[in-house]
Figure (tube, helix red, strand yellow):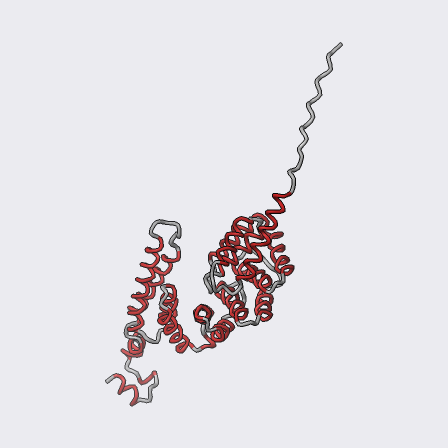
Length: 324
């Protein structure tokens, strides 16, 4: 009856009954009847996802606790989607949670549905970047490049930095190494502050891709600038930045850590990471990892072959002269 009266009067606000014109919740409830419940489910799911992300990885039962939090969030978001199938925020978080749980098909479905609601041009880097990362893991390089290129932006935002690193990885895997390096070079600001995780992630990625392109001098120059700025802080800050970078493919973590350890002079840890990367049969840059291992082994053999430095004993202190 209320809708019939509205249409009969041409839909103007003045023609609405006062009880409806003054009730702002009426129209919201007509369009989103479950809005309050969906908002509650979304808030609870976000808390569960945050709890999963803050779980200390070295704690006993950490993996099981993290999976339980993500599973709880996933179940809540699935129910929220049934209540509000066109809620872009619900679809976005559902896609993220499904991806974290390894449910790739569900993640693609939810993220694609989110893009259909918001439109590609208005989608955030967390949606397009996540979708591109999934396609990168699946080996669908053209799709990965398309979505990751849309997720690029100022790397002061973590999502943009991660998307830039993944874009370079996808371009290099496709054989476009020059474009991969250009994407990383142009992403870095003119005045670089290495203390921020996003800048460290992109800088380490640049060193890695120079190394993979056998431009060892350029890779060393990038690492030297980082070392000159951060000095003793390079190792802990670099490890933190890499811990916050989701790798695709996963074995790239070994390559990045090996480059970091070489830059900090920790050759034993560097060799171990190179060996882990080289142990992956289909790793695309396996030969470069083996080259690094040979160089580190040659340096160690040369150090052992050098004769030890002769240390002369310090002269004994002069005795005081007797007083006549």
